[in-house]
Length: 123
Image (cartoon, rainbow, N blue to C red; front, top):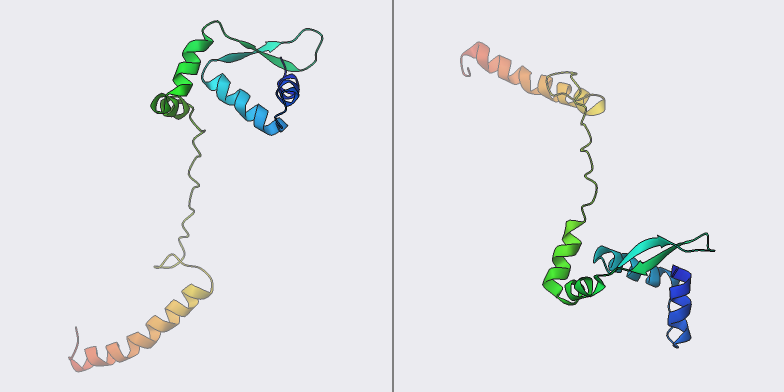
């Protein structure tokens, strides 16, 4: 049965069902091995059929701790960390306006220190 067929069946019982909600439910049932994808004859859409051991999957789905373990098994793709490019300009590894201001600030601080060193007051 296709997702649209499942949706129509649910709506025939008087319950409103959005396509996305039915699709989400189908994905959950697939995770617990209750249903599996199958080719439907006479339809271009992918359908689903009940597995032979669907009761085991429903038992797993009923227990909240086991449900957590099954959902945990699906791994998300690991994102590669972005390389940080370090600039090698100047002793502070800065470029642009911050580096220029840092150099000016150090020159201002260096003049009084140089005077104190000349007088023998600083090392």
